[in-house]
Amino acid sequence: MKNYLKLLLFLFVSIGIYSCASDDDYVSNPEPTPIPVPTSPVNFNIDEVPYQTLSEYNFYEGEMKYLTPVYGVIPYELSSPLFSDYAHKQRFLWMPNDVSASYVSDSDIFDFPIGTILIKNFYYDKVLPNYNTKIIETRLMIKKAEGWVFAEYIWNENQTEADLDLNGRDVYIQWDENSVTNSVNFRVPSEAECHTCHKTGDVSIPIGPKPRNINMLFNYGDGTKNQLQKWTEIGYLEDTYPDNIESLISWEDTSQSLNLRARSYLDINCAHCHSEEAHCAYRPVRFDFESTSNPINLGICVEPDTEIVGAGLTHIVNPGSHDRSVLYYRLNSIEESERMPLLGRSLKHEEGVQLIREWINSLTTQCN
Image: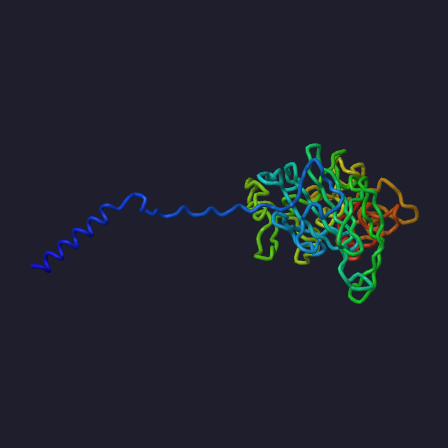
């Protein structure tokens, strides 16, 4: 009987304790801590750019010469390489928060928002006498309310800083390539020279970042991804572009036809001048990839509008005869008054010249 009474007392006390618990004793499940949205540490004031030094933008972390981008500065490449006196290039893209570019067409520059910065670094490896990497210049194109503006930054010898200089200059470089010493007076363009190539009419524009040039895989270090997809994921591109964008092939891709490779080479190296409303629009050729599906736009069997005395040239492209073709002659020349392109090179591009020679000699069209 005593044990029974003790059990009843224990139950009574236990029920009392739990029934008298206050609301303050209730512990709810805590709300999950929101993951902070990363922000880019790039320093940007649209009213103050271009800055006097490259370091002021804070594009790179650590020692600037290694070109290690901070968050939000995205590396990219073009599907077919541009020749610039054998200089290497590293390209980057940055945009302010909450803005995106939009698709226009496969062959048109993206419609970039105000505040966009396109960054292109030019450098050589194995530069003599120390066989080190040397960055020559960094070119910026910045989208402001009034349009695109240029900013040229020339790097110092210690590779610790680059200073704004829009006057243009030549930088002498010697470098080793497969145990052969090469040299060039690399041209850092002036603002006026930049505008010569980067324009439609009188309006300054970028050249490279078009959907067909960006639609390719890129290794980002943490994985390989299509560049259009990467730009969309980071918020730099609206997800409104089509799935069937035709990419410009690399002219270096020997698995492709000789004709496609030649058209790709002329597009990336020559079309910025030989297009509508461009610097050489008065010439009877159009080298953008869409236009060269028509052989007349390539200059095939088209008589030249200027004469190079003593060269024996009969057509812009004389099928089967590279030595009678103006196109080959100009690509093969290093004379400033004759060479093509007019700007952006002073050396002969041996690989490109060989490609165009083979292409011309493979043609079988009969000119009247």
